[in-house]
Each structure stands twice: as structure tokens, then as C-alpha cells.
Length: 597
Image (cartoon, rainbow, N blue to C red):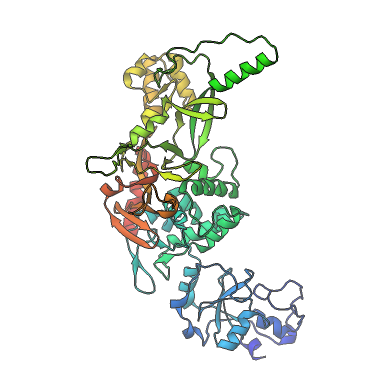
């Protein structure tokens, strides 16, 4: 009766309408046995909220850790889990027969938070606590971002502090290694700095209807990485790794090292399907950021052994054997970029989408230097990029067939990923190629690898003048530009230059660099696989200060861009530079961010 008089809009218990009785209980009481209590007093107590609680001073924020899997520490169930704000342990339910209720009575810990709804309750009295002093606990459990805060993340240079007073920069924080899970850490860090992907996952409303649990776990980890309200200066990917293990059917598990390219490919495709993406281009934020298009020209013929065996089978069957066609003399000495002597090769051209491009690294020399050490060569990135210049053929030997493939880029994505193939497997062991690939940190030019019309590379002014009028109109039509206002050929040339060539941005800046380091004593004759013996680290740049950071698990330190370009890179992620209009809009946004701060 005293509780009823304290409630706003109070009245006699008999004047209130009794709450209807349902078999489905109120959230938070599923752990208790369903008891039918139709009294108005019970209904009022179940809905009671208080702004004052005598036990708020017992909350110990130093022991709170919301990164681990949200399961009850007694029953190991993940349904309706509460966290004790005094000792940090997780328990199920808050009804009379639940583990949280028992813990509150036995240990004298009274303040609990629902890990799903973020509501705070006092047990065993079972009333909700509404107090602004607890907002920091809710922000640590579930960070929230406004549209303005998301827009200012790229220009943030202010350090945040955790509850222990340790300074950290949001977005550049360490992640726990759960025993050989460093490949997950570097991939998540790299994707967390892809701006459209980050902005999408920082707003839970964008994927609240997604059925994939992996999408929600990835979004939660993304929000914690960029949060300035963390209680610790590091985060743990425990929930994400557990969901990855389930979704990949134990292909990626804790305690087993994996290649970054395999995990990145699986993660991007799984997130794409989880967000409702299809084969249609741009059907998800994943394809909008990473998907490009490449033209693959395949030349194929049967090997000499297969042709000889077919001739023998024909002779055995008594059929007339066809006259052997002499091999062209220049077949072996044929220029690798030409098509001479390939008359007996079949030809097939297909346009294929891609999320990343694989680059083959040249093999290391067999001989040692004058001092008896192995020679580790350095190769520029442009040498390994010749695979996609539209001229060079790549030889592939399949069962019974010899293939030669040529690649030409048709469409460049906003973020392009290069995978440097360092690991090769055979029947006996795995080998790592230690060749260093040097690459530019800024202004990577890819116009020579982009197909434009019938040629590879953007045309110069002289080549535009030499083009015919139908060719110029076809270029405008392909890029969706109308040519009705053009009267002379000069007008067409100017329109192509202004509306097509100048709008195509082919320069890229480095966004993330993932490296694989082998231990100093690792030798080729070692029995341990170089993949298992080594570890991953990632280089990231803070766009506000242009400072590069090196992150390896929990270690975060500043580094120089000269060291980034000479590292033993495994995967490179480049971001396309802004056009003149986009750069003007971005500078205006940066100015407004400075004024706001």
C-alpha cells in the first residue's frame, strides 16, 4: 500500500485495473517459474521505477567488462542475462527463482543491468533504477553515435581516457589476442577505417532487421572500437570470434592460425549475404565499397601428353588417326605479351566482379650473397601490377589443359584491396616468400591499368583528337552523358574530356597495410609452418593528423610512413582520392568540425 501511494497518479488499489495475466512473462522474469498473481499490488511492484536507490554507491566500475560472451556464469544460458554491477559477473533472470536473485541475497550485491535492454534493476526488491549517474555504464555497454559524431570521426585528434586514467585514441586501440586470433584483429582494424563501412555499422538502425548474428556482433565490436566512453583502453573480440566459429562451421577457430586473405574473403561475403545482398552490383555497403570489375581473357589448349594419349586411343579403336599438326616453331620462343603462334588455342572473354586482387611475388634467388646470407630482393608494386595491364599472360596448368589468362581492369572500386601471395603450399610443407614489395603511401596511379574503350589506359589529348565521331559518342553513351548539344567534333572532344576523363579518379592513397612477420630464427628447413610461427600486425593512418600507427594485438605505437612502405606487406587497402567537388565538400565539413569542437 505504501508503494501505491508513492507512485505518480496514485489511487486505491481497488480503483486500478488489474493487469491481465499472460503465460509470457515480463522481460527479465523468464528464468522464474510462471506464477499467476492477479493482485494489483504485484502489478504495481513489477512496473515500479525509482530515481533513488541506496545501493548505487556499491557499484564497482573497475571490474566491469562487457566484452565477453553474454552467458550466465552458473547455467551458461544466453537468454535474459544480467550483469552484476558490484562484482561484474553475469547471471540469468531477476525473478525469485533465478541465479541473479540468489546472488543478490547471498552476496549482498543489489544492482544489476540487463545486457539486452540496458535497464538497471535493484534486487531482491525488483524495481528499476532511473538515475543519470548510471549513464556512463549504459554508454560503456552500448555506445551510441549521432550523425554529427559519425561525421567528425575522421577529424578527431583528441585522446580519451579509460577508468584507470590510460589515454587512448578512439579507433586506434588494442585488441586481445585469444590465442592465434591476430588475423581477426588486423582484419577488423582495417575494415574499421573504411569510412562507408564504419559509418554504416555505427548506426544499429541500418541493420536492425538483419537475421545474421554475425552482422550484429560485427557492428557491436565496431561501435566499441570507436567509442570514447570505454572503461578500458582495449577491447576483446570474444563475441565476434565465437560467432565466426559458428558461422564458418569451425573453419576459423580459436587456437588455429589462418591466412588473412581467406578470412577477409569469407567475412566480406558473409556480411554481404547477411545484409540481404545479392549478385546485383551495389546491393550492399560491402559491394559499394570494394566491388570492381575485371575482364579475363582465357586462352586454352590440351597438353601434349593428353593429345598423344587421344591419338593412341584412336589407333586402338581402329579409327583413322588425324595427321599430327606440327607445333609452331615460335611457340616456345613467343613473346609473352603477344598472341603470335596461338592459333590452336581457344579464346574466351568474361567480365567478372572482384572484391580484392591477388598479386604474385617473384621467387627469391637460389644463391647466397658474398657474405653467405640469403638475398632478400625488393620489388616495386608496379612490377607485380603488370598482371593487370591487359597485355601480360599468366600461365595456369590444370589437369590435362594448359591455360593462359590476361586481366584488364574495367571498373575501379572506391577501396581497392591488393593481396600479395606470400604463402605457397605443396604436398610436403608451406613456404613463405620474404621478398619485400615497395609501394607508395600516397598517389598510387592506376590509369594505365584501366580499360577505356578499346585501349588500356586513359587517352591523351592527341588520341582524343584522332578518335572518330562514333567512337566519341559511344564513350559518352557508356558513361551516361548526352551528346545532343554538340555540333562539331571539337565539342565532342571537349565534352569527353570534361565529363568523362576528368571525373574518373585513378589515384589512390594507402589506408591500411597488413604485414606478416616471421620470427628471427625461422628457417626454411624448420618443421613449423611459417604461417603458424609468424604473427600479423597492421599499419593505420589517423587522417586528422596524418600520423601512422602500428597495431599488433594490445600494442599500439606511432611509426613513420617510410617504415610502412618497406614492411613485409601481406595485404594493402587503398582508398580512392576525392574528386574536386568531393574534396571541396570534405574541406567544408572539416571546417565545420573544427568550429563545432
